[in-house]
Image 1 (cartoon, rainbow, N blue to C red):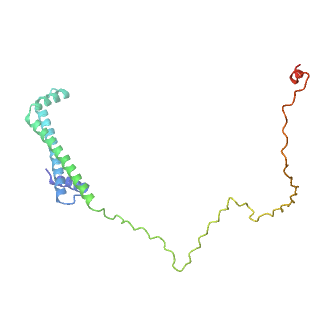
Image 2 (image 1 turned 180 degrees about the horizontal axis):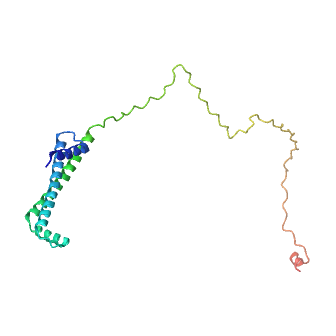
Length: 199
């Protein structure tokens, strides 16, 4: 096998994953070796099939001849072994890639990102000039008292007239008590008032 093809395949993986140390580089090499062997296994299976296909007597029917070749290789231990190797190389490639991506994620989280702008501190608030007089604070207008009206000047009141109190002559108390009536007055004779009022 030409080593130039293997080195080119390795350089492509290095440019893609950018390993930062020997640990990450070992994982990249494991990936390349597993992928390279997986390709080799596929090539060997193709070569075995072509060889068996040529060795069998060709009946002129391509599909029938291919079926005879496949049936003969199905019982061969070489094909089963190559398929088992191919599966193992495939799993090794993806397991190494998953481990490499986890290591790179942890490394990027621990190290600061280069060329990242540093956060600038907040500017200080504008301080007042010491010699500048502060503007006067306007005082609030006093609220009008509800007891007072809009016009605060009291209106003049008319003078109260003064009337003289008449002096009545003083009545003297009687010296003798007033005689009481001797008895009830007699009722008037004739038809009574109730009778007169009847219709």
